[in-house]
Length: 581
Image 1 (spheres, rainbow, N blue to C red):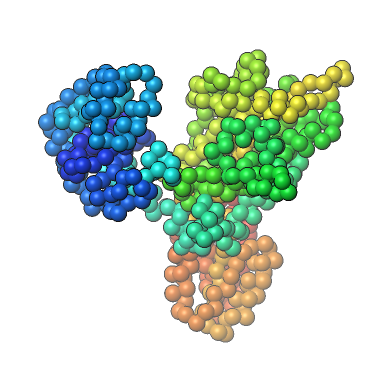
Image 2: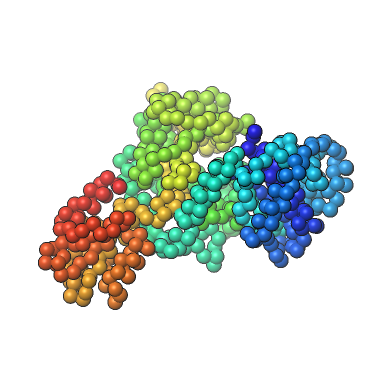
């Protein structure tokens, strides 16, 4: 049995239940989604023609709806498909303004409906044969949310009810337990409690501010990228935050992605755009002088902050924002250099992710869509190169047939966090669009002009999103080398403050981030606060420690591991840094 058909059918059953419980409800749409389903409603107590609601459903209402759904399921109601004229459909849905809008915009003279008991919905299907096929213990309604009709903020806001569904009760229980664990790891809550980043509506939705502790981690990530990429032959660029609109018209981004870009700014009778991507700037740098085959490959890298207009309904902490910094790079090479460069990118990408603690991942290779830039020959060569490299490295991957963007095939590496959830990180993407539009050339061995191959690549994706994933992966308990505050030193009494400062100075000389906690509070309270702040090491110093030039070490997750000579402790944590434990 197809689980997506079950999920889709449950969306209809939920709509039927809501109709019985709330007569006069208006219906939006109700698809199957990953792990479940949802349906959008304009409830009778809401104002359906204006944005916003007077009153919406809450979690407390869901058990009542779920109970009604189970009553309907037990009746073993058939799903009956019909193809009817638009005229007839308008009569059936005469009181459903959202369905009428959909009918009007659907192509052709007929539409498809599905009837389940007394409930009729506009739908292409497919569905299960009858409600009797659904196990009552395999689904659950989980949450409500506001959702603009068709995702457009200019449209009315509807009430969206989400549910999850699986083939077995065990799968459902496992999923719900994972969600409880995910709630503990929510980077938005941890980010606030651990003072890592700030999101403030007065600053602007989707525009995060990195707080001092978060900024320390960001700097560590940036330094790691700078050091390793420089050793790989990358040249670093810094490009402006705005540029003339004509640049993105020429690149094609304005035509293809206009709805996801900020509105242009008028300056001196010219129109400028907040930078949505770094690529055109890098191409301009390449084209700023004549390039020879001897210069290739050229690798331009930039930690470039870009701005894209994401609808407010999809913004989510750091993982979906409007202003973010990409670890962006472009490799410009010859046909003969492609395989070597892609292999280096894949190897390096996996090693970098491993350094940050991500050892499990899935790899996807996206191939040519129906509409594409460049030549068929170029696409075939690039795709074969990607397959060749993955095969050579003996990496398992899945083909996403036709899933490539219009300008080239790509490899996506999606990491798995400690809960097994997938996150998009590394992307290696060929581009046949920009070399054509900007007429990129190099001089070959025979003195003739040739078009180079161009590869976009991002190893971590955006720093903001990657940071959000890191927070959830480690539940805020970052490994020692990444922790913004690595060591707290707690003097037992005022007579131990001098030794605490000497200890701190010695640690700082060795490059460690430490802080003396000498507030007028008990030692146990300071230790407890350090545990809540997820400090990797807490050193307590008193008379015994002073006499033996030692420290009493408390290690995160292990508690008191005993007294240790300071030199020995420094050797221990140096090793942790080297091994990136």
